[in-house]
Length: 187
Image (cartoon, rainbow, N blue to C red; front, side, top):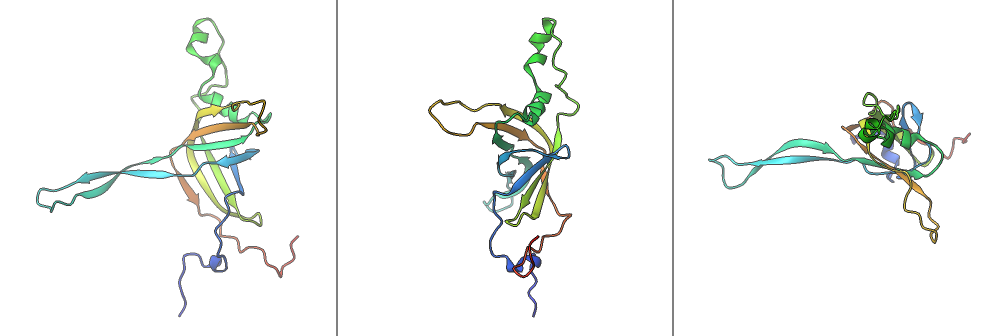
């Protein structure tokens, strides 16, 4: 008798995938230096109700689902990708006070294209893509250009971008890799 499993190719794999091999893509390009991505998380609220003729046990039904904001972290560099995107939502030079005083404002601020779809790819130890998630209609709600600076510390300066999103789904368009073998030479 054959055993039917949900993962027929992964029958040899006992270990779960690691959380340290990933890449993030937006606007068709990989974003350099991402060192940390918060969890993809969704929660669904519940409605509790009870009919008059039911026993004293309440019933529960699903209500609205919410997707938690995603936080991206990377070391501070000269790459302006985080700041450019954050400036599309709001920038000091485009504030109402600046415009009232005859300021020209910042042309980077855009209500037209401040939302982006992004792709989070996860890789196995051999560097093969094993899964990807499409994250929809993201926009920056928080941007930290520089962390707290400490002359007595020795930590890496980390920049932070917090993205609100309207949902995500797993991309199932590519098959699970079979993995490298001891018998096959690696090139």
